[in-house]
Length: 230
Image 1 (tube, rainbow, N blue to C red):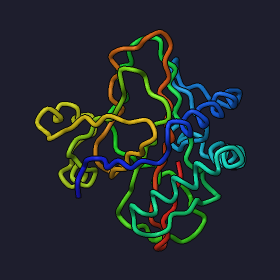
Image 2 (tube, one colour):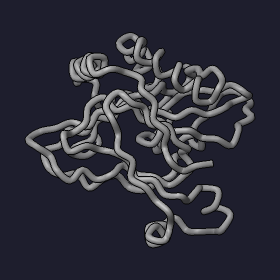
Image 3 (tube, rainbow, N blue to C red):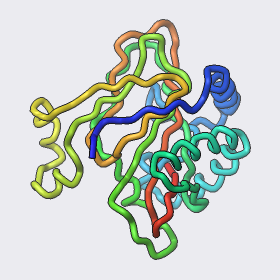
Image 4 (tube, one colour):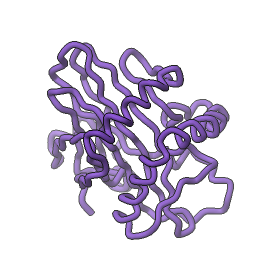
């Protein structure tokens, strides 16, 4: 299994612009996380300390997002279904995929390296058999002129657990681990195995005020059914 992302075209430039315009019109619903990051939607990783709030916000945001972006979601579900060679659905009791919005006026140092483990915090409200694949995707809608992307390392969560590697020791190991930078392209979705180490790549050059806007989400197989969520 490769740690690298695969890319597929989902939207043309006009469709991306339409999506961005809708996102900006919904700015009153953006939630701020620090100085530069906003979310439109309710991701698990921002709510692990209060999962009751997550489930409440998931219901509210799911209705809002589907009403405004249903055609976008249908296109994304088709690509995800082709990727796993099975139909992918939304699961109404958790958040559907939502948006990262970075508003940048200075260079951005990038996101911390991590494994995607949101499924560990969720209550699926049903007995579940989970297949050991946890897939992450990012669809770029607007990027800074200098570009944006993702850093990935050939180190899996299973390897970390089996070898007893402490999470605080991982950064010191990355220099000796095979890695890659992959750049995003507007309109293309990047799909990769979320249990490989990865992180948002730095953005070195920002001209004026620029945005990095992406649709984010994960897919998981529950009881032989693929579900997309955030």
